[in-house]
Length: 384
Ligand SMILES: Cc1ncc(COP(=O)(O)O)c(C=O)c1O
Image 1 (cartoon, rainbow, N blue to C red):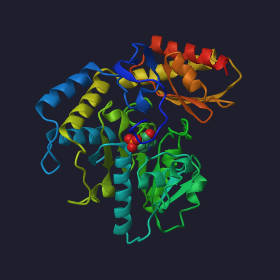
Image 2 (image 1 turned 90 degrees about the vertical axis):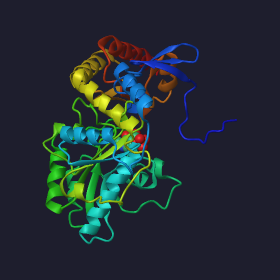
Image 3 (image 1 turned 180 degrees about the vertical axis):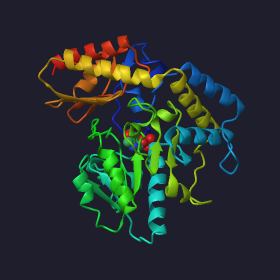
Image 4 (image 1 turned 30 degrees about the vertical axis):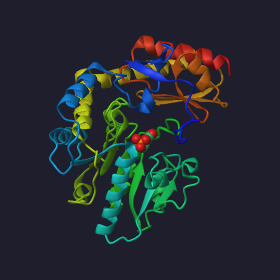
């Protein structure tokens, strides 16, 4: 009997140690982690600089409260805003909470414009979290089933389809559009190059906020610090989590321009959000990404992995490979759920999303580790 409430269905393995791209289980067996704790541990497990920052901060001060100034939080907000061209930041503890803050900003934007029943456009097959508002924003019924009534203000439109957005421009209740720049949980769906440019133009023409959920794509995962930097835009609201703390929980909601002025004193808050430990860790993550030129490695290893997956996975079961940086999905022409356990037996950690194998390896991955992933996947595909 387990004392844990059900959530995910865990694989039959327990990890007790991690170093770089590898995890070690209770039996002492080592696994290559091509998933990074679902895009979290970008700098690898127990990166020495991050461990040192955590240890030093833990010995100094873990938590005070947002009732007092927090030095590292102020420095982190300034750093993130400078890096992203945003104006200010709110800190939370997870991606869903960062998105909750974004949705609350959209409501304040609505009420400032005397719109009483605000609607936010979000995309089909999107994923924004598991709280009531964020699962309502999520365009996937599996996440929503059993939890009705949902928060009613979301209309789900086709992703990567500008006409689907334009079809709603006459709806005066729409106040924002919330999108992942690349859809992660639904299998690395990469939109057309100018999609976000066009979305922003529609938002500006209609006074809608552009909310970009970069919980998964942010902090270097795609080869830029933020995926929207592949476009010629700055969102009104930007949400981050996952890679920002390299495993220490932290979420952030950044805002720009009019969106940055909507939270006023007392309108939103968090007990833990932005505490000294989380912020010091995030500062150390950003410093390490810069110092170790991690973005260059993401671009280089992303190209290496995709080129070699394309040339070495010769089976006709592969339909296409979708990717941006180290966000990679290998779409097959058949169900491949069984590969999850088969990969585990071969000491490789992957994710299966629909008919795709999804890879989110640490951003520090090297060529030997990339070759190991490619060769193991090649062997796995032969057993399908
Ligand atoms: C794009 C995106 N948004 C939000 C979330 C939710 O983040 P969290 O699980 O930290 O609440 C996720 C998690 O996978 C995500 O991929």
